[in-house]
View 1 (cartoon, rainbow, N blue to C red):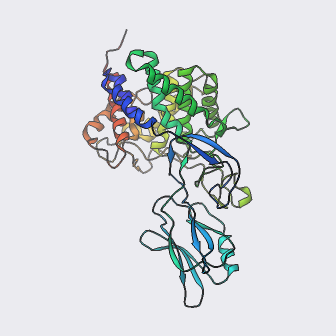
View 2 (view 1 turned 135 degrees about the vertical axis):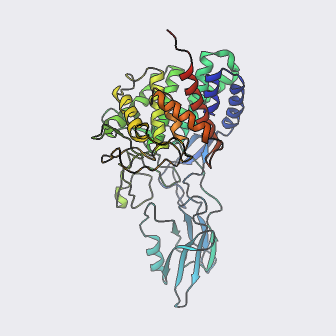
View 3 (view 1 turned 90 degrees about the horizontal axis):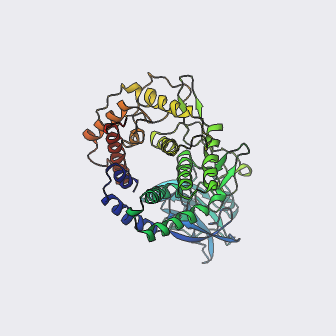
Length: 459
């Protein structure tokens, strides 16, 4: 959708606005308000507590499967089995009688291959299996016992239904193009129907207000973005990754411009200040180190888990560098702050724009010495780490459209704007297994930057 607005701003052609309104109406019609159980681990059988209403776009991303009843030999429910992997990673929970009289409890993939298994022979063994630590990235399923005895032999499908949720990590990114459209309509009222503008403004403001409680103070003037305890997925209770943080910061910045509400600017500032204070480092080469998931905190025992998480152990290195496509969200944020002259109000050190520019030109695209010709793309796969050097091996980004985020010369330079445009013309003839929206956005961004570069300069 963003590609349509970028194309309109570059050309002034109203057909792009109409296409945006058509697409936007469809997307807005997908908004739902769901009642959720506001407790940790809400999908556990028998979970109780008070409910809250949340509004947004439902998703199954990273969701747990709905627990499936597995009978005992007496016909009662022995246990509930739940896959912890979205999609077809795990399809079945299987109970098999073994020759020694024991039972094999196994998690199977869609082809009935065993992914993980345990052998038990007693109720005590079943209890021990159910009590095993849940390890993020390793444990594929879990069981809940009822006390009705050992499970009956059989194969039970566990991936028929998954827990739908409104995941606010994704909401800000969805709302960005709507807010951009409303800003255009505010500047040029003739481009949009006033009723649509009024309706969408109300919805955007309303949805934005529903998850402000997920922004928590870091105690140092900034904000962290924490997933709520009621999420029925693997990341409940954890900090959001950097791309979602910057997407929401951009959304709040734009919403401030639209409404004049200083509270929205304060949220954008808080998110930016936390990243700048704790996670934006510059290495010995003078390059900015952007992190993929900088706020995540690992733990090794259940007692240390954040409220809402089911995991007994969760390990991730917060210093892992940001992939190129994730880093582009930070650049979008900087570009929006630059466009609306909000660097000072957002608490951003103005030198960060130059440091980012130097990092991109001297590292990510190798001092403009990379061969901008092949279909593999034109920039490195991830931002630098402390030990990075100009001469280290080049691993190109798997996302060929990520470089278009740096197409505006204020984020790179005019030479890169031209190089990116030339690469797009020679290589960007189809989406390359990426979502078509990303492909169209890359074209729109690249063409808009090139058009602006070639436009006559005012005196």
